[in-house]
Image 1 (cartoon, rainbow, N blue to C red):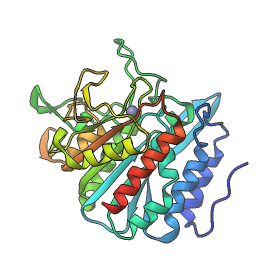
Image 2 (image 1 turned 180 degrees about the vertical axis):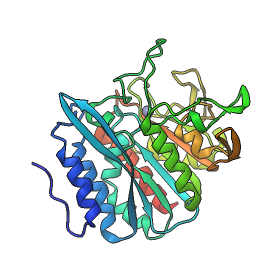
Image 3 (image 1 turned 30 degrees about the vertical axis):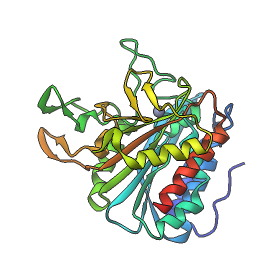
Length: 316
Ligand SMILES: [Zn+2]
């Protein structure tokens, strides 16, 4: 049965919930993740106390089990504008920890909204979450040629090609969702210039967690170190040294800046390229991508660790 919206929703919230509940499909739940409807209800509870507003970034649509489905990608902003902390989650649909932790942190986020400027995109890839698919077009990562996964977190069309700095790395956006999300970041960063960004990920193929720190201090970033300590204290083993499974160096639990074409790189980019012109980018001084070991640590434990990180942001 469809959950009832709480009292006090504005009319547009009712239409968002109606859209979500119109989809007659079951969320993949073998790992214990919340139903997708439950996530939307939780996120929209942020609007109850008037510190937050919501915007629809895009509708993400497909056909699933013979049914046409459509879910909104929602972005929440605090009424307080200015230098902001960005929180992103659910870029990869097989990584439910971030979306679930945010759904369980609504009270903390409500409190934060009274004193800080925040941009929150809690479920960047709803179709992936629903199906446990990493990408829009396929379930899993592979590096086989001709088998490219379409990520909602791709921003190569705005990022400068290191080999030819007069060009973007891609001529056009890789898909409609990544186009909408990248555009939203550029639009929202005018009123909410990002100072710090956190993107909650996870990986079933790593035994220990680590953080990509792609802002100006890279692997020397002190806030990334604090976040690593919080993860460790909350039962997440940390890979302090060595290499990631992609061959990147890990220094004190951190991997420095990567040219991976991600939305995180866009948020931290000081220069970007639009229609062949180099222009200032959002330029977040700190941008972190958090990775937890998802095969070995149970979802509820990972959720608790990410909730602790969100609580840390409240005090930061
Ligand atoms: Zn991921």
